[in-house]
Image (cartoon, rainbow, N blue to C red; front, side, top):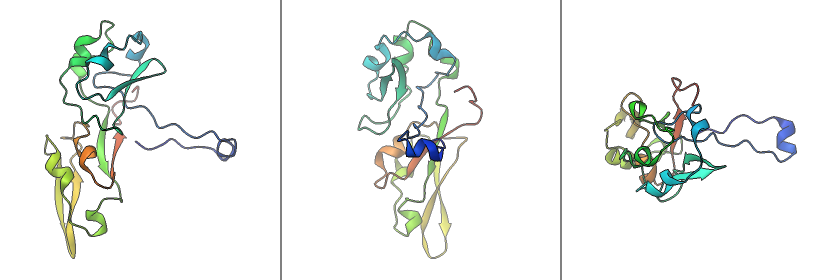
Amino acid sequence: MNTGSISRRSLFKGELARTPAILPPGVSRSSLTRCTGCNQCVERCPSSIIQLTGGLPEINLSGEGGECTFCRACLDACTQAVFDGSRFHFNHVATVSDQCLARKGVACQSCGESCPEQAIGFEARIGGPFVPAVDSARCTGCAACMQVCPMDAIVMQPLKEFADG
């Protein structure tokens, strides 16, 4: 996800902007108030992508844990109704940055090959390899594409429909 903006004053004071947290599927900012920090969702996640930060669950996609398989183990483990089973999806979608090999003229389609929803297609380009295009309506935000990208060119962008998180 993109970092928030930072003022010049904050920069000189050494206060760096924190990247907004990626919430687990089915979790909203308002439902986090019910979280007790029991750590059950972290322990039950088979992909090891949930972590507690400040006593609250968030997703860490930068490790080698993998992607979210939407197995609902976190939902089943939670006794405080932090996870909403009817809205069990992420509040973000994948986007491809300019660091992408294909955008730099090198043929690569690893992100599209790894996408379980086939949300990443490839568009023809004159004089170069096909470039990835994410269909945000199909993207679940699972991060399978992030895990295989050799250039770390996949980033997650918040969906506008999740104003509260």
